[in-house]
Length: 225
Image (cartoon, rainbow, N blue to C red; front, side, top):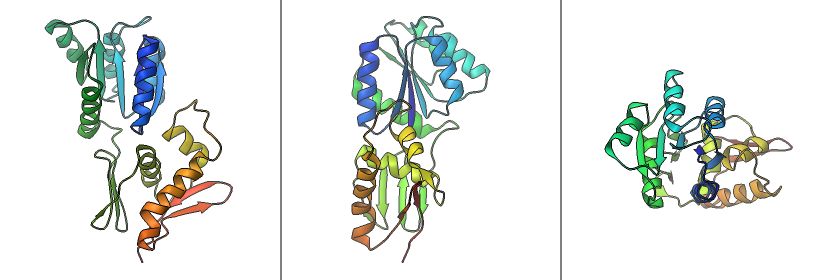
């Protein structure tokens, strides 16, 4: 799942990127309102973390413009300002939730998960491939009645394959969607995660769900034997 962070404090933006990536999100970051508005128009993000006090365009104006263009991506606003009128203005311009700095990172994650669960047009649906079930909103994966524990990145890879079940997903597409648009990943990082997934969702159950398409990428198929 891809998240956009629009935050002009570069240190905070970097912390948010690292934390969200550790939870399995692909994260794009920018530091001014005009660039953030442009990025939000270009990509179907699952959520946007949007600071209010931004150079170029403030967060209120960015959010208001997105809603005027009928871009319904869930928005979590961040601000150093504190007061009921500021919170009311954030919500009135179309934000879905609001956090005042300094904030608890655990609370930010919980609110972000709640926004994605509640939806918006970019929410990923639950996927059923034979007896393999995964739900991106709750991060649950099971084979039949057996719950399967996956790391954040393993789940993100599997969820993206599941979203396009039956289709060949290129390695480049996986890198962009699971890491981020500018991530300089090691060439074998996808192979490592695919092997780990096969050891968890296929081999113990005698299945072969993830197929390699040599020279292209991978495909998730129903192998319900």
